[in-house]
Image (cartoon, rainbow, N blue to C red; front, top):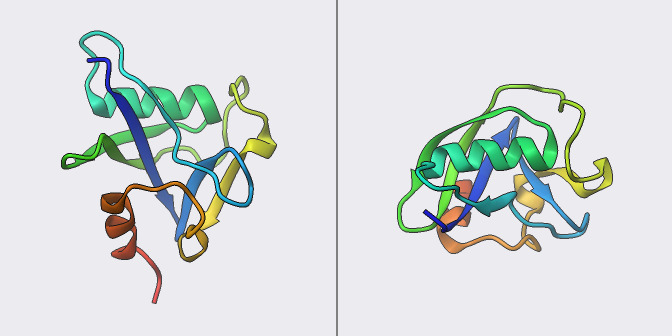
Length: 112
């Protein structure tokens, strides 16, 4: 596979971001041989953040996969420190590094 996959994890009106608290980016990583984009997204989120997710729906042509959160608390052993893992309200993700198709998806999930 070899392509970078980004995981779009939305829970309770918030988006899972990693990196800088004032911006951040989607958890992402490179797929392993014979690994689907959905499996890559789920693995990367778990490895980076400790959260269990189910990679359920690729966003066409973006390399991003929408994931359902399966655990409300992260497990031990995440690669990133807790200060690098953020749940940002969707309406406050303007400074995050998100592809236009991901922004369009999120607009449909912003609480009114």
